[in-house]
Amino acid sequence: MQRNHNHTKICIVEKVIDETPTVRTLIFSDDVMSAVLPGQFAMVWIPGINELPMSVMISQESGKAAFTVRRHGSASTGLFNVQVGQQIGVRGPYGNSFNLKQGKLLLVGGGTGLVPMMRLLTFVKPSDDVTILIGAKSKNEVFFEDLANTLLKNNPHRVIVTTDDGTHGEKGFVTNMVEKLVNENHFDGVYTCGPEIMMYKTVQLAHSKGLFVQASLERMMKCGVGICGSCCVGEDLVCKDGTVFDGDHLLSNKEFGHFHRNKAGILENY
Amino acid sequence: MSQLLYSKLRISFKVEPSLVTSIGKIQLERPVMLASGILGISLDVFNRLYRSGAGAVVSKSLSTEPWDGYPNPTIFSVNGGGWINAVGLSNPGAPNFAKMIESNKDVPIIVSLVGSIPEDFEMMVKQFKNCKVTAYELNLSCPHVAKVGLEVGDDPELVKKIVSTMKNSTDVPVIAKVGLGTTHYLNTVNAAIDSGIDAITAINTIRAMAIDVETQRPILSNKFGGLSGTPIKPIALRCVYEISSKYNIPIIGCGGISTWEDAVEFILAGSSAIQLGSTIGDNWMHVFNDINQGILQYMKRKGYSKIDEMIGLAKKS
Image (cartoon, rainbow over all chains, first blue to last red; front, top):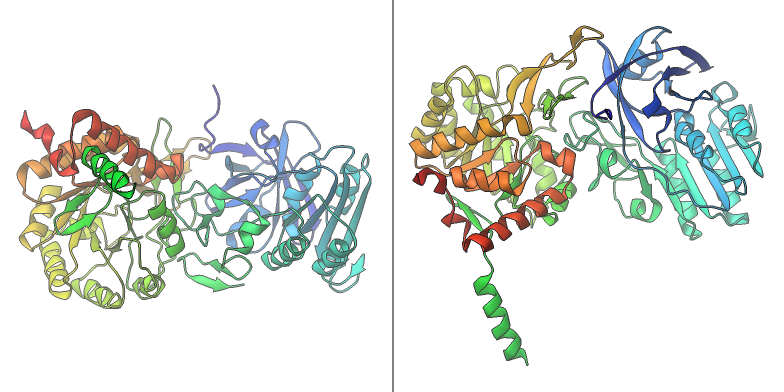
């Protein structure tokens, strides 16, 4: 019988990888989650603690999937602290996915926003020329650089890391590198996920050059299924209309890049 | 040429049934509304729902102060259909919400209010003096938050005081949303009618819970929530039928409606309008238009020109 994706499936965490001092990847076995599309998410239950929306990370082993979580609030810290052998609940996948073009592609990821970018890399064609930008504040926060190189080993590719303090890769904000790249190159598709200001600038820069650009948004979510309304951005609901939106649509949304809503639904500035 | 067009238009208007409905003094272009608690925190979303076919939108239940609601998990999908939720009435508070809808011109917004004492409601109504509000809906039935909602609805004397205060505070129609608590809901309906309520919405979600067998604990952070969706539809329908059989009061049917047949059932049981909630998660916003069109086709097939002609017809036999 096909599984009802709204029902929480209990999975056991089989392996934990420390990516940085504040970021961990938890690996578990689940056929449905291993096959999600880039941009889709799951609602992840940490029994007794909370439930939160997570982009589904790839695993190198078939039939397995993962969540890569940054320790931040109580829910994400709860997930970060889950040990091997502990149970988590998973429902989904929810949401849409990136419209992957062919040719010369630019991917821009920051922090755990790299998760859907890594999954996107598993869908590129061998003939695609892929540039991926990884933005971080400092050297000790850089992760997935080696993984990106591995995933792209059969493609013409560049993996460019930028750090705000210059301790690794190029010095400066990742969006400065986006500006340089879109000024000097044509891209057939630009894809971004990460901090909203980074996505906003990336969308603006790509759109100003007439490039096809999409971003995967993050918002506070309660239900994940289009009922509670917590994740609204203007008239869009991230859980049902997204998480992936076209750049031209996003630039017409007056909340994108400026506001998000808190738990009570009140708009707050980024 | 223009005369010919005009005459053609007139002919088509004659045969086309109308979805316009009246809930007492409230007139709506379409009988299908958004239920409270669903998607109701952004004016942009309200506009989109209205464009999608909603005759009116009911806001999330607003309190005097902003509420964060409960931690997740706040919703659970029931095996076999329906949802149990305990969002915990998260809302931006009546003052913030009123500011947000001040610019509203087009959308019929029904403002849902939740509170413990008459003074809470009096304070909240004052916030909306510069807003276009179609009606207020009093939440007397949320089953998962202490001291408000169903705990208020279970106390008919308190219901009387709150409804009287509301009626003295505003000329805008006031609706009471009732549910199944420890007091017979018809006593709550009776108290509201005695105090001059303009309409009744029936029903809210029904107190329920879910336990995960692997981790052996309740799933919702609040343990208890409210059951919604298709499992409660027959119960909601029975309540609408009972209220309309006993009282001469306009009714808005709510509870598990997901198809045009469900909507027509509620109208035949005595509803002047209906509200949609859980089905939006499954069928997204086009469900409003789907149900509107279904009702229209039914009216054409059966030869009705107005919703009013169908309200309560099932009581004839």
